[in-house]
Length: 180
Image (cartoon, rainbow, N blue to C red; front, side):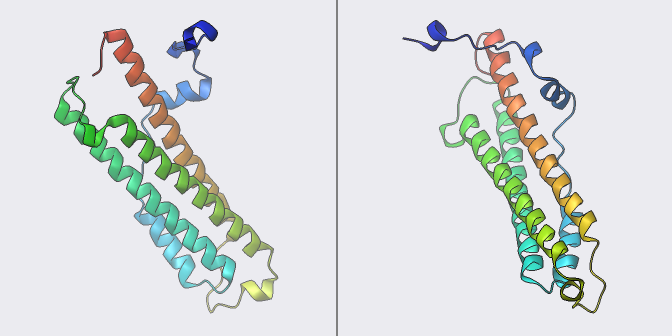
């Protein structure tokens, strides 16, 4: 029994949901991470509670995962450039396996951004006297929570774009008659 006898799987790209089609129209939203690192370093420097340190730690873990995903994405792009559209596969750097590893790093980054937002939320609920134990006024936690959740959405968007590119690559291969 084969899948084709029991189910019909749409491979028509026109059937993609609007969110997917919208993501296809622009590149993955990679961005320089130095500004975020500086923001979280400043927040961490003023941290006085367990939750603040947990949020800072989670944010830096998210940045590390995204940095690794970007490094692997660059390696995959370089690999494809070296192949120049050749049908050969390099077993040591098989694109599908590397693609999955990139997505795993991005998924971890999303999880860390969520952990940071949760820790910030707890920090925001603490009594004002506890959260003002630093010499400097605390960061606007509402703004920081919002920024953290925006980063989470941005990283999910990168994942969506990469998944869509993978589907399109295989779809194009199917239409073209072979691997590229």
